[in-house]
Image 1 (tube, helix red, strand yellow):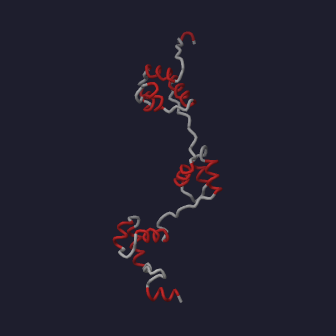
Image 2 (cartoon, helix red, strand yellow):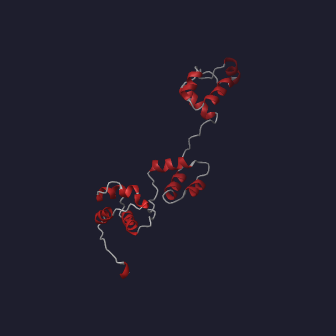
Image 3 (cartoon, helix red, strand yellow):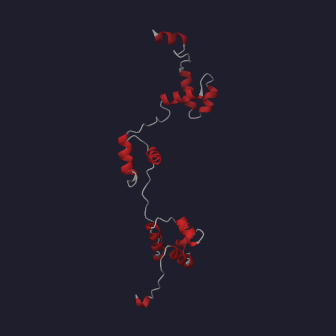
Length: 182
């Protein structure tokens, strides 16, 4: 009875016009430009267009996180690699897992700095990691501008003054070893 009335009048019980095949085809072509879709589909509101796009499968559905999934994020996220996270949350895009982890305040575990091949710089960077000091903070403490942030030492640009200042800032001592006494 109700379906016959809707088909006859072209209006839903709430008084809104029923979506026609032509309107849905236009929305599929115009998507994802919602503002343009509202302009073309004059009898549709912005919310109606977004809702119809979601029901047509044009957009990703919003995922409702369960307590078990949140617990799994808290357990795995700090140390797991991307492959493990993808396997642990099948059907959920990785960017949504990262967004949820940020929302609940779970962060990735800090990774050790990559070795440079220059022992003194590697020791300074290792000590900074132990003390939880970033390269930005190290440059500020040692007053070395951006020397440790930018890492120009791979070009052979080793600044011994910066190494000395960083060693002093991290409460270290510099020692000289002679090749014939090693």
